[in-house]
Amino acid sequence: MINKKISLLEFTKKELDDFLTKNLNQKSYRTKQIFNWIYKNKTDDFEKFKNLPLEIRKILKEKFKIYSFELEKKDVSKIDKTIRYNFKTDDSSIIPTVFIPKVSRNVVCISTQIGCSIGCSFCNSGKFKYKRNLNCSEIVEQVLRIEKDVGKINGVLFMGMGEPLLNFENLVKSIKIFVDDDAFCISKRKITVSTSGIVPNIYKLLEKNLQIKLAVSIHSYNDEKRKKVVKNLNFTVEEILKAAIYYAKNTKTKLTIEYVMIKNFNDKEEDALGISKILKFLTKNKKELIKINIIPYNLVEKSKEFIAPEKENVENFKNILIKEGFLTFIRKPYGTDINAACGQLGLF
Ligand code: SAH
Ligand code: SF4
Image (tube, rainbow, N blue to C red; front, side, top):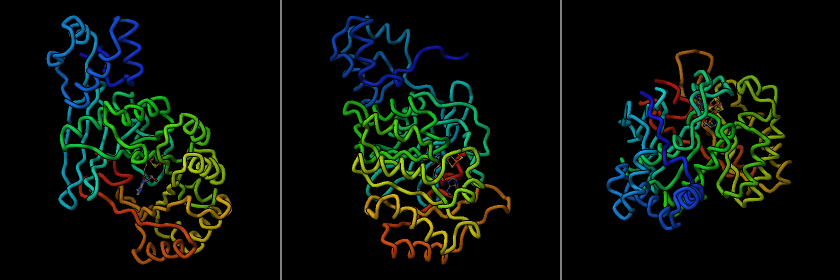
């Protein structure tokens, strides 16, 4: 039977405050108490909310729930201790989430949709039929459950399954909860939203003034070439970069350019020089605004259509961009043995 109770993870602190003060005639400090029980003590048992009056506990118990997921599967990588969780939702969809134990901090890579409508041909999430947006509570529960399992989370990457900027309202709400001192208390600059380039929503995100970081998946300076792999998106590379650079300038953050590198597709010197040229032009040569992350293609299926680039080509490409003056890194893949790396989350 589907549980009709509303999850308390749907509420930002302001929303819960409004609800408690207006509907239940409670004082504001109750909101903080409830947030503490949920996010600091991580309990989903309303009986344990001892500092709340009995009648409030009763209402909470009747109308609300906290957790909704069942843990369908949990795999730990033998290579690097990355953990992939498959959470099962009320409607039996599977949400993949990845925990990355970095040396300096604990990071979670979260999903925002079931499937993805952008349909990039190198990404398994794109091949997976789009079903729906995740609710705010489903975005938040991914981090809450993992924090409960492994300990304090210090960074969130919106780089899992789905296009975050196509689930805009829930993205914004969940970020408000991630940064809230009484919830996860994650630093704004440790949250990154990665987008394939939904241009109007990049500007809308700036208006929300959340001060988090942005990453754009570019893959090529050339529109025709990009269109061959990023199928269902009608914005040009220039429009996307303009919006993203505007975002970076106005938030005083560095913009990450993600570049999935595929052998014999976008791994040549002219591809690197093309990217450099357009970035120099659009930043008016302010290269310090940019960080480039080269992501060598991760295998997502047995098809011969895409092949990972040679190590030497990736290094050459990186060195060209560094010589051009850009801070450039090669993104290390995490959890390739458990289908936890970029592009692999739609593999079950
Ligand atoms: N939809 C958003 C965020 C999720 S994808 C976006 O596209 O940005 C996160 C990153 O994984 C993107 O940069 C995407 O290009 C990259 N990616 C997808 N499939 C990949 C693959 N097979 N190998 C390497 N990176 C991949
Ligand atoms: Fe969607 Fe991003 Fe995968 Fe493209 S790369 S299909 S936008 S999740």
